[in-house]
Length: 307
Image (cartoon, rainbow, N blue to C red; front, side):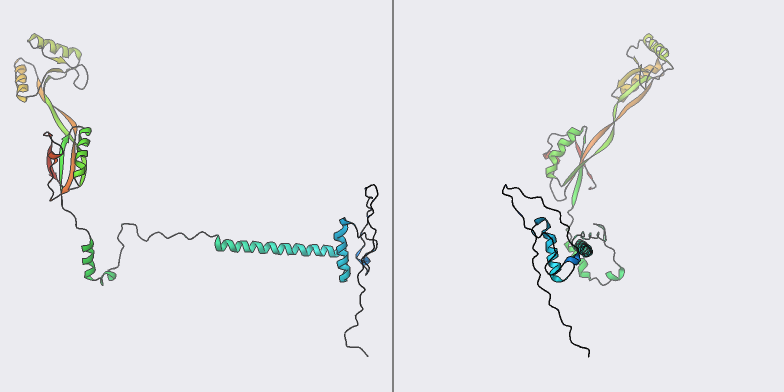
C-alpha cells in the first residue's frame, strides 16, 4: 500500500569547520608567501565544508562565510547563484531609487509650489464702481443723507493775485513771506509790453552811401543831432531822436518835415515778463499783504477765481 503520510526526513549532519592549513610564523618575524587557492565549485559543498579551502586567511573570510551559510542551508554557492544575487541587489537598488524620486516629487508638489498671486482689484483706485439700476432702487434715502453728512463741508475761500514782480528773485522772496499766512499759494507769468518812448527817424535807404548823403543834407540844414544806424534791423536808417513824451516827438517831426525831410515817428515797445503771486485765504479771514510786505507801493492786488 501507498503511504499517505509525510515523507520521512533524513537528518543532515551538522556542519563542521573545515580543517584548513594554519598560518605559520617564522622565528625571524617574516611571513610565508600565501599560495593561490582556487575555490571549489558549488558541488564541493559537503556537510564538513569545502575541502581544501584555507579557512584561516583574512583575505578569503567573506568567501568562507558564504560557503558556511550556503552549506548549512543546503544551498549551493556557485557562480550562477552569485550572479542571481547580484541581479536581486540591483533590482532592490533600482526600487529604492524610484521610491526616493517619487517621494521627492511628492514633497516638491506639496511644499515647493509658490503661493498663488493675488488677483488685481476689479476696478482702478479712485474709480466709482458701476451698479445696475435694479440694485440702486432699494437703497434707503437715509443712507444718501448720511453719506452727504459725513463728507467734510468745503471751506469758503477768496483768492487774490499780487504783482507785478519784475524778477523771479523778488517774486520768490515775497512768496516766502506770505506762505505761512495763506491757505494756498502759487505764481504765474505774464508777458507785458513796455513803451520805451517815441522814435523819430528817416526811413532806411538802399545803401550805405545814400544814408550818408541824407546825413550830409541834415548837416547842411543845421541839424547835427542825428545818427546813421550801421547794423541790425534798422540798418541804413538815420535816427533823429528818442522822446519820452509823445508831444515832443511830434514837434520834432513837424520841424523836419518843414525842412523837406520825409521823417517818421513810431513808439518803441518791448515785451518783458512779469510775475504775479496768487494766494487763497478763508473768506472770513482778515488778511492784508501789506502787513508782510511793507513799503511795496509798486505792487497791486486784484481778486481772481480760486484755483
